[in-house]
Length: 132
Length: 242
Image (cartoon, rainbow over all chains, first blue to last red; front, side, top):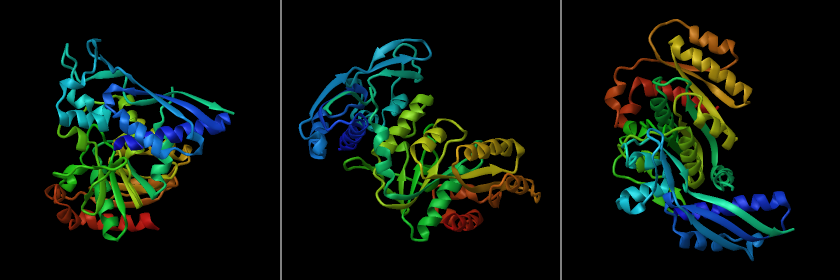
């Protein structure tokens, strides 16, 4: 249920944007969920529904997954993260703090742990639509 | 594209009365030992205290406390376990004994993640064991946690103190509350660090002589609390509460 805290962050951030943009209601929130964090979309949706305030009464939450692209700082090799290559404990550790991937994942070409998470790390708000 | 995490941090820290970073521009000055002992001493006074190890690439407070076989709970976020009466959190719960090499952007991301998902609950004081230097963690925390206060640690060496002086000036420029300076591992009677600290307008909290017995207390917090080092830290803890 760590997803609950992330859903709370989405609600809080969207509320702040609505206040800044003077939106009376939010009709749609689009979020991108990076594969690396392995967030359970069902739990995010459940938590979002539980946390809805008046501002979000008619909000449609759209989620789409983003592939995680990694790139080695040492040899420039680029590759995609594949959860299935990890054991359950490691996958769970990365779920809580995606940066600990640097302890478990190595560049498949040169073996270096010094890589960049180019995209697909965690949750991002892509867009918010609302009515003024 | 908006990263939603920073927006929820103020809410997470609303239940914490004071946030105190134990910091130094230099490494190897004893920050982790001081942070852990201050936290333990404050908890012994009956306060609700948290200890958060923010040295992501070289954590060590878990070794000082002898943390074994516990994990945080998942409860609408991450709930830190209790270790010797402290609500305790460290990245080692997820990285174990493995080397975790992190560049600046990764350190900022890990910090943002943990600050936004950890549910500390009601605390009187949260002690932060900081990484050395004036890098990402110091700057991110000053930006993200408005109530943050600093205790700065130096040794008697000018090699440490010259960097600490820069840090004190920076904190002053950023209008961050600095409680004072601790001179650790003092091995002479000269008062250069004290006079220079006071000349800069900062409080000299205490000096702590080098304590040979400290190493044998690692992993045993009750033994740590019996050391001469811990007795001096108790006075520092009292000054922090004034």
